[in-house]
Image 1 (spheres, rainbow, N blue to C red):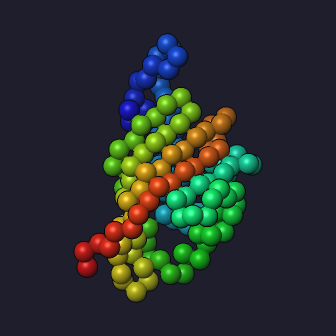
Image 2: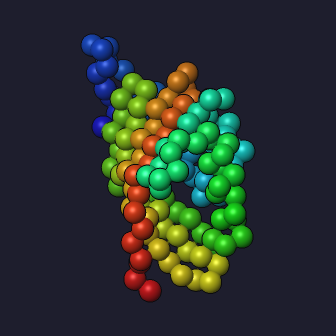
Length: 135
């Protein structure tokens, strides 16, 4: 189901509060290096897990890990390929297009899971792998 589509949750028909759109807005904030804006979208205790072997991190630790990208990455662009929304969860397949300051381009294919609590992101899980893009 795409964000904003009518859904049936627990027998109640209504709009899926557009948590799918919130998940995409979170990615757009990362694209523009708006780390504080992204942080505001999360609970105080939000956790991030990534398949990089580092285990779970707080959202603040993850954002600190991303800050060095500002100087070395020319542009980031997330393309959401498909998205499924539940009452408080979003699962999406996406491709991150990365252009570095020296002009190199890469694609990072990923599946990302968002869990929401009270309208805020409480958990993010990302399973990704990098694919060198055509030059």
